[in-house]
Amino acid sequence: MRKILAVAFVFVAACASAEPQKPEGADSVASQSKEAKTATGNPATPGTQPAGAPPNATEDTKADATKVGGSGNNQPQNQSVSIERMPPLDIPRDAIDYTQLLLTVVVLALTIGQIIYSHKSTDAATKAANAAQKSADVARDALVLTQRGRLSVERAKVEFRKFDEAPQIRLHVTITFRNVGPTPVNVTESQFDSGSGHPDDLPDKWEFPKPPRPESYPVVQGDTFEQIKWINFENEAALDRFKDGKNVIFVFGYAKYTDTIEPERIRTTQYARLHNPARRPPITRAIQKPHYNYAD
Image 1 (cartoon, one colour):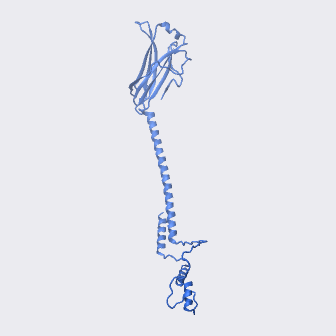
Image 2 (spheres, one colour; image 1 turned 180 degrees about the vertical axis):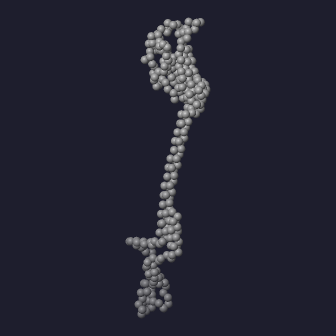
Image 3 (cartoon, helix red, strand yellow; image 1 turned 90 degrees about the vertical axis):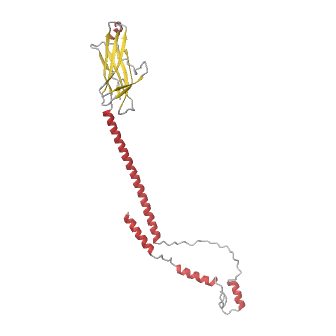
């Protein structure tokens, strides 16, 4: 680019020092115009004859010739002139004109190059910003995956207890959550309930009798959080429907919590357990359905 500008500068300097050439035929046109002005436009000087008068003309003849062909003719001054055809215009071009054209082309090329360079620079900056954002998202996802707290159902214990001072038999249910992540969590809501029925008659959705109660219960790394419930039976006869194994006890619930890595997001751990008192020993197992047991 510097070489192009240097060549253009030298070319302009050389053209500026050269004398402009006269158009071809300019001298002949100027001489003809001068002769015409001398013949028609200048007043007759003493001793000269008016144009159109014979050499040996008398004074009267000269006067008449002057009236006809001289400056004192009687023709009307304001006559209309009609132009039937314009002569072709031949404008000569010199070196300065071509230099200006060359400089215009150079400036246009530089402008186009600047636009292309700016567009490429913008694309490169956009790609770099997108790559940086993607890297930041990957790093943040890795941090969340490895460092956030997690509540997991560690144990579901269901046992019957009979008290000597009361005829009732009570079913004691304990659900134990444990924070298995490296950072603390805060439990914001929890609920659980129980029911009974045939193992094949599981509801599509668990219904809780009471609305959830907001709470705030911090659980640090490795610590536990428990849900406890007592279910009363009037007597042992009320347990007969469970002895043959046709009816089982369902225990279901959830816990919602936040963690310190993503405090704005509320996570949920949900569970559903089945207890069969007819088995020896009685067992409590998870119900293998995705919408019953999940954790996010």
